[in-house]
Length: 298
Image (cartoon, rainbow, N blue to C red):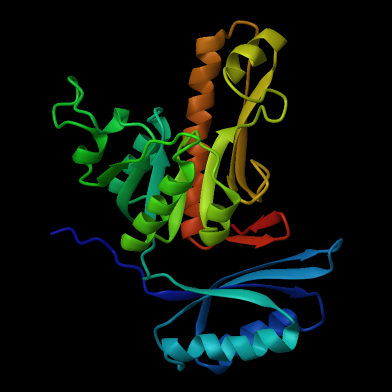
């Protein structure tokens, strides 16, 4: 009988600090001195900012320190280096909430990839400001998307008058479902500054026409302008609208033979792929944010 291979649990350290001699040796020695086996190590030096940034992953089997002592031990090292750092364990399964409006291409792509086990996470919650994707559709015999994937769907309409109250409800749902990451899969609402400050782990996807073609029908205006390249950008959400640290981007060429439907189709394909890659990189703890930039470790 076929048995799915279960990877050995690992710990991953993401760290950034002022650049100085001996950093790689100091971090590697921490793992070695405690009987650990490093499986991935990567680092980058940003010469302009004078920062050293690193991702270090090691097996937990045979590691001398119990999990609850790894953090404090790393904290002492980080303090001496003036570092900021994160510690993650590979067998800790994050919980994701997907937010969506009317377009379902990014939502469906993430759900299918999750079902295919392309990334490790739980998706217990979908939130939408529209009810479209919760309705039974004739050519979907099992009913709505959320029903097909056995995920709770919460319809929270947003108007200027209800926005503040609905964001309180959204935050309550995130706490109730113990959500670690929100993915805006074409959620066509601007989150308030207060919301982002209370829940900062948010990934967004949008076309890369910005800031050239802001607002409605960007593909129509791009077609009128005769653009030759279109793209998609996935980034972390910050207080600056559509200007957070970029995780992933991609582009596709456009020819004179492409009409508006072709631009929309190609744009949706890019948005699916770019968002999926960004979510996977985040879940694998390969993204290190510093300032408004990222290092994405391979």
